Amino acid sequence: PADALWRQLLERLDARGFGKRRLIVEPGRSLVGNAGVCVTEVLYTKPGEARNFCIVDAAMNDLPRPAMYQAFHRIVPVTPRQGGTVSYDVVGPVCESGDWLGRDRALDVRAGDLLAVLSAGAYSMAMASNYNTRGRAAELLVNGDRATLIRRRESIEDQLRNEQIDS
Image 1 (cartoon, one colour):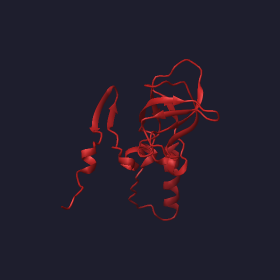
Image 2: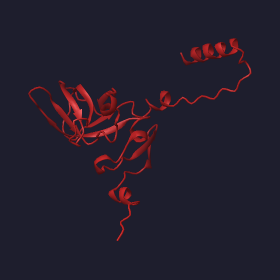
Image 3: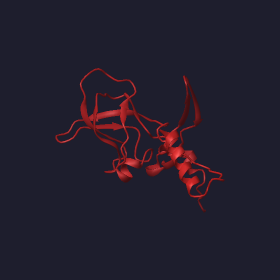
Image 4: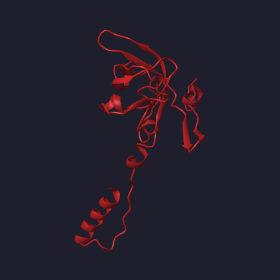
């Protein structure tokens, strides 16, 4: 499909007299958006009368798109179970009404399970912040069966490094 799209685009440029061209394309999130995954641990589940909550250790500062404009990211267990699912709102520990990663997700999870928030490649670290004094997450590059740490998790010392106190 991409080849056909490029062919059509180049044909239109040619038809408009731009046959001699140097075309530079930045594919951006069309490539890296789906390449990244935000992995988060289930801290606990909380049943409710109207909704059930799956509280995870990732938050709106790690992946702000759902909180900012209700973006949808698939959320799947890293190790699926064979049991029945429950509908959960997957939320972070920041205790803000906007601190959610997904609503109404059918999951079979327990505390300690890992969840993968998919299509986070162009959004997690690129949009992450230190909101609520939360350190940004570590980043790993996965190539086949090898994982390499490419950015360590931020510490409180990292966050305070540039602060100045006048005496």
